[in-house]
Image (tube, rainbow, N blue to C red; front, side, top):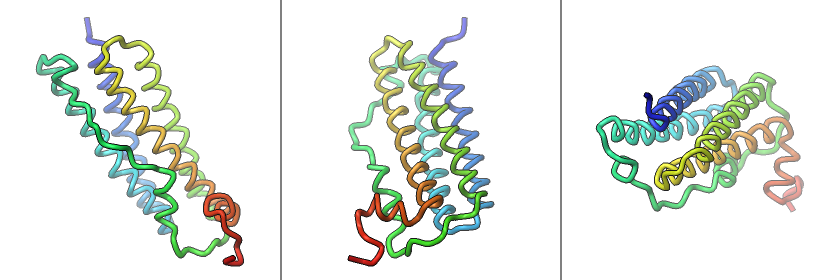
Length: 174
């Protein structure tokens, strides 16, 4: 009988691999430098997430229990709401991006929401506290990816609106 935790981790690895491939293609296809920066950031973050999942998976395959296979990190997650703002300093609010970038961002948001649902579903089923904490970490990461992508899409769809809302400043520099 297959181990449900190992099955979940295998599926999570597949999701991470697909995300890395999608974001790498978006980097290559993205005509705007800012879009490329965001997708490059997501490639790096997804590779880190994949490595984390792989580390836990290998520990479980080696026969370790969750407590030994999954070392929980005490680090503070990066505030993804600030990440995009840090990428755009000095960029004047301009016209909206071409729809290929917005389309890629929308597809990425949909994929991240599916991954978020995947981790939430498994977190609701597990009773192991370490596995639950690991899944909470994955959920936190997915939420961060969603925030970054949503903020980026908003900027590309309505740069002036983004500056007004996110930067809380007028467009006249006042």
